[in-house]
Image (cartoon, rainbow, N blue to C red; front, side, top):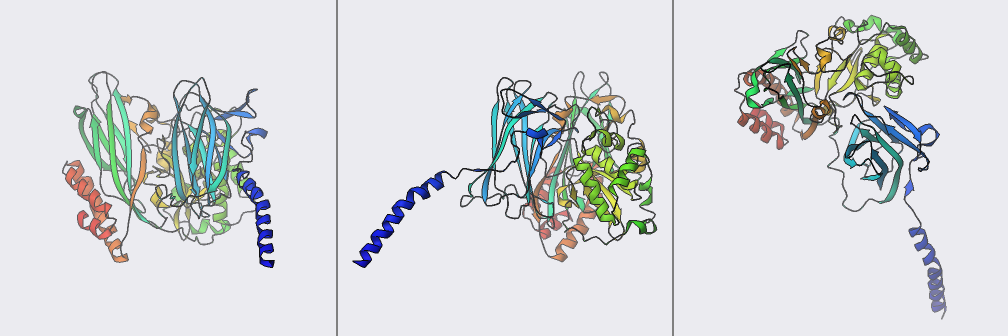
Length: 549
């Protein structure tokens, strides 16, 4: 009897508790992770670039106006960082989007970072929105377990405006069994990685029958990278007259010079693709260097990057003042470097300053683009007595329209040139994320406003860091269309023993010079390129090295 009474009592408790449990389960709504989903209080917590806030009586909150871009380097976007980021739940981001013209194409990009600020996962979604009505856009993310924060960006790559309102990020149910983000995960920073880089350029002749030369920076041997293949294509085929490779006098950078004759009343489309092997490495623990002792430790090879130039105006009073401000109470080199990229990533300049050039002085005044921020970071380093230079590359972490991206490298005694990402505030980004196109010299910086170069690139970028057209050519099509083709993607990781990897990189270095010669002589056959591609898919260093011999 006592047992039956106890059993009845338990049943009664369960009966009373069950509705409560069900109610709690049903009433556990997805948690809103954004502190300011309606862009109130001046869009506190959000990053705005080429964007404004306006009030709308029909919307509870404010609307972000993504003003559009006049140049492909000048992204128009609004973004936010979620720190910390839940890693055991589905994260659903949504917002309302509208365009200024019918069928406006917008992007939502997201990036997960670990506690070392390495990008460990990325997502890219495209949305086509109308002019007449708001469209709801939503995406779902599953952040990797070692994620520290999630960065989400709504990007308008168009020249016309677009609008954003009513954003939200919900932490939903636990991840479903079997869910994986492997398709988004980037290789670890120490992985040896094969990357495919691609660029496209459209050109026209100033008159029918006119030919000219297109000079394109291409991946060369620099630091951890070893280009394995190079394939050039020109459409229509008859537009290609010839091409050749040249190593620039600086001894670092390579150019592909393409002699083309665009068809009458038409354009020539030049595309190149390159498979690039990049050696992975872990971030360096940098030696402690006191700023007061830096000058005595600088080698002759680094000192040219101390002087003020046309686009890195380190002698400008405003830049010198900002460098002094950033260095206040900082005594060591690494801390100052981190102070610089924190400032450049957040700087939006002063309201009303027109963005019409990419140099450091203008970047301080208006924020600018990634090129601007790289120039500004270099100037702030130099103004503090630290050699620094800018580096153009194609990042694997971004899958949207981009002419090219920029970072800065500064000289750190005991370590050499150290990369910093002045747009995203990343210290020592991993090399397998960024095949390098050009490393700027002071002489290149002094020609940043060269009249020929600025016919294709916004004034202020270092000379020959991007496409250069000879006087008989000009840009064809829409530059933003070209930018959608300029990208890099990680193909696979390459593994092997320490001895196998050493042999692979030695063979890859010899292969590069052979590649430059055989491609120019048109003896780099498509079959050899195919062999290299097939061998790389195995992921085995020994198989790839055998094919490269």
